[in-house]
Image (cartoon, rainbow, N blue to C red; front, side, top):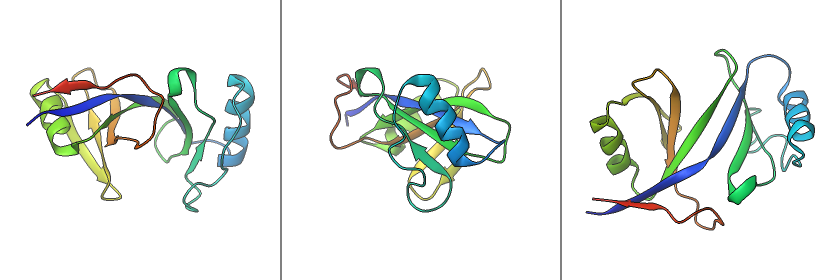
Length: 128
């Protein structure tokens, strides 16, 4: 069965400071408006306006060290995770029953998330 995936965007993980102050800094640094200072009401996510090519840029409050990670979006989470495991990635955590945190062989963390319904992002890759 064929599934599709593509780069969705970048998540700026922030351990220090408040979500609002972190979102304000990155908003001003990148020249992008904060769309919501508390998406989902959990005090964890602050999306910015779309980045170049429609990429999703978001500030996230975390308990682990601050870093930037990327998201890969797909129309079939399990198929994409299996494809990435064959390349050497490993599953770390299934979050909110919606997406997988994974780790590349290089040690970099990334997420596999559901594909956005409406997006101006590049055409996704098709995988068998």
